[in-house]
Length: 397
Image (cartoon, rainbow, N blue to C red):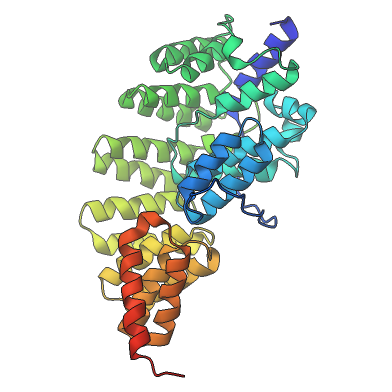
């Protein structure tokens, strides 16, 4: 591996894997066509499209990106397809753009071409802030292959003495404790690169050292307060996101009071940070406080307009409380936001059937059956049964 390639690899790891920018926002481009899945695959399954995308990521990133789009469309709660599509769309970029992106060029990160791509990573972390990001290895591997004309890939890269690069390499190999140790060395060498604290925290999470991870996120928050960052501000390393991560860690540990406190701190930083409201709703449900859960879901649903999964969960909770019309409103909005998301059709059909609106319910059940993945077999069978009953009760035309 020559000096230039080694230097580029180091910069790539430092910038892309330890400090990739994320930006809020949604992609408004025309939806791509659904890729043709392998024979026998369930074309209503988010998992089927995700697996197809993974199989095409290295060699057919355009096709992989389309598959990940449809996986996310079919399962709007899933973080993995959005993160994977971020990787795929970066691999579609021309080599010079990808090089500058991985080198951390601010002009590229803030360009119109890249901002919508970067938003995918941020959207994934809003769904699961502790998401394992193992496909970063594929991103840099394919970059190195393209940069070297096929002579160099990630598997041929050895430890270099650059602690940040070596930390990522060990992380990619599953040596999480050693990765955390090497990030500590990198922090000593580059004390103003606050992104390294986020990287060390995530290494601790992967090593199941949860208290150490939480402490690292707390240190990142303190350094942000001091204003010690000198480089491009990373949205997904914001103070509210760090508190969100701490809350998730405390949830994993079963420390719900500490989790709720962390989510409240996230809202202190940014009252409009809707994932913290959702997390508080779920924590309230776990504690048996349905009233507060309803309040938090209502706030979250007001703040965000492209999370049909949140509307579905909120509607389901309203349904358990007997608020049928309010539940129906949420299910209807979920369908408006994502007509390929199957679950709301079934729930709304149930509400309309209970209200005696049989023809409406019949249409909704049919749409559910047409859109639902085979994994929803119990609900599909029930919907078909209800279709048969309703058809027999409707007057003949």
